[in-house]
Image 1 (tube, rainbow, N blue to C red):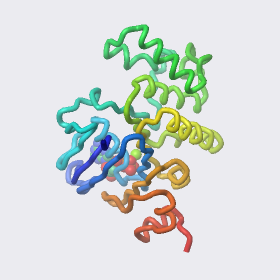
Image 2: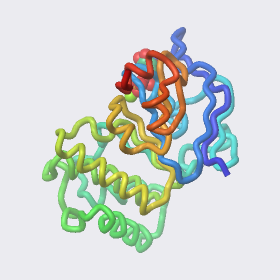
Image 3: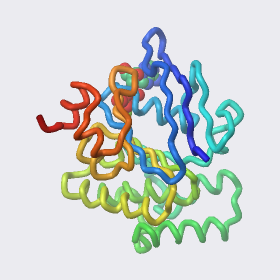
Image 4: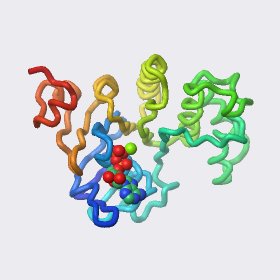
Length: 238
Ligand code: ADP
Ligand code: MG
């Protein structure tokens, strides 16, 4: 079953149309990358899927259900933001547990999930620290941990590595690829960085000027770009 399906979706802010009649099927377990320049609507698309932004027309279906019948908390998706959005006054453990307390999950189940996420991300010894006592890379892992504890069907990453230095960006990218292998969850990963897209994606969706310019595997997009724009953006040969 298709996990997430958009059909003829459009979205405007005021008079500015930012998504124009877009259709896309994201398969269960797939790692799909939305690649495009700044302003091409990547974050807006993710926010619509997460339920943080409404759609003007068209349909969005998640797990076979129409989005208008699904509140954000019912979608089985968890978003990881570019700026981490951690609570500074809470410990790592509390940051990860916060959303689960909010939905009144039993404490022993919360504790189990937090420990499982800490094990996956190898940060068990950091659970008692506050964000100010962590490096940039560690903060990003807490943000990922906060998504893992929700045990979502799909992870939505909005440029998760853009605030990390070059070496850490490569390391975290490799870890995310391993995480995808292990969790077998659907991942939608937004970036303007073609190297990230090439190394991570099962399929790349190239966004430009409100529309999908091309959908394909990294090799297809690189070797057979559908337009001059795609060729230029991914640095195709020739
Ligand atoms: P990207 O993530 O690819 O950089 P965005 O989805 O953030 O692109 O933005 C796409 C376009 O929509 C931009 O022109 C941006 O200024 C506009 N936009 C995004 N969010 C809002 C908003 N809440 N109100 C008005 N305009 C917005
Ligand atoms: Mg964005």
